[in-house]
Image (cartoon, rainbow, N blue to C red; front, side, top):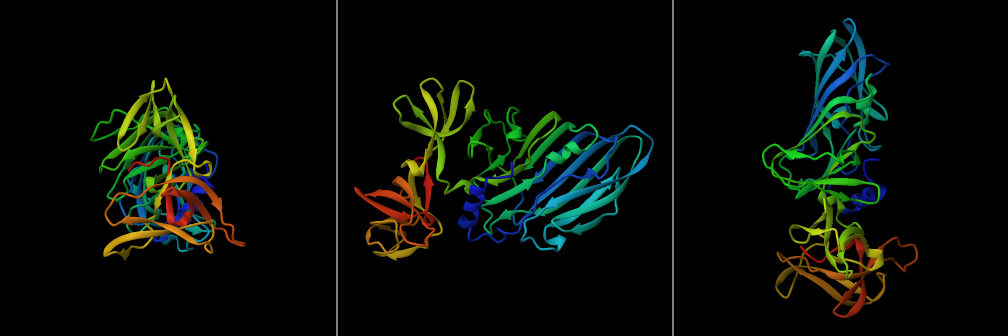
Length: 390
C-alpha cells in the first residue's frame, strides 16, 4: 500500500481548501539498525495520540534482545516527507527524544528526501528498553475535522528476527472533531481491535477500493488497542478521518435478492453483513450480496458540498447550486438545488458522472434528476453518496 490511493489523494487536494497544511506532512517511523545485526526485537508498543491540530504524538516502546556482550550499534529513523515539506526538520518533527535503558541519547539529524535521525546506542547483554517519543506533522485542517496520519510499519522487520515477537498498537482518539476514523491497512485484518474503556460487540472493515481496506472506529476519547504476536507487516498504515472519503464516486452497498439497496456495506459479521443506513445494523448473507455503486453508472445521490457559501433567498439563509441543461458553464440554467441552513442535506438522484463538453475544461459534472428534469451540476460543488440517507 502506498498509504492511500492516488485517486483519494487527488480528491483530498481539491476537497479541503481550508486545510492549513495539506501540502506539508510527514510520516511516523521506527528506529532501525543501520547495519546487519544480531539484535532481535522482542516487543514493540506503538502509541499514537491523535490529539488535535497539525501534529499527532507518537510514543514507541521497544524491548531489544542482545545475545552477545555489551556493544554499541548505529540506529536511524527516517521520517518520510512530501516534496513541499520545508527543509527545516523542526517543521516536520517536534519534541524528538530517545532513551535507552533510561539514559537520554545524543541525536543527530539531517534533511534530504526524508527527515533522518541518527544515534549510536549502547546495548547491554540481554534485554534493553528503548523509548522514542516525538510529534510529527500530519495532513489536517484548521477545524480538526480532517486527518491523514501515515506511519511506517515495515521497518519493524529490519531487526535480526525480521519481526516484532510481540506487537501492540494503541490509538488514542484525541479531541478532534472528526466523526470517525479509518485505519488504512489490510495487515490488521483477521485480528480484532479492542477498546480500553468501552466494549463493542463488533469491529468492521470498509473497502476504500478493491485493494485498500480500512477499519472504522468511533471517536469517544477512548484508546483503541490491537495486539498480535509474531507481527511481520508487509504494508504500512495511515489513520484518516471518514470525511476523507467524502466526494468519492463509488461506494459499497448491500442489495437484497430483488436488487434493492438495503444499506451501505460496513463489514463482515459471520453469517451476516454489517450495514448502516442511519444507524448500524445487520442483514443475513443469505439473500443479500455486496455491490459496488458508482456515480458513473448512475447510482447513488448527490448533495451540496460545504464549500458552497451561504446566501440569502426569500429572507432565508441557504446554499444554492445551479442545475444546467448541459455539462458546461456556458449552458442555460434550468433549475437550482437549494439547501436551507440547518436542515438535513437536500439529496437528488445521481444519473451519471461525466466530463465537461467545454473545450480545454477539466471539470466533472454529475448528471441529476431535478423535479423530473435531467440536468447537470458541477462535481466540485457536490458530494456523492451511495444512499440517500443521513
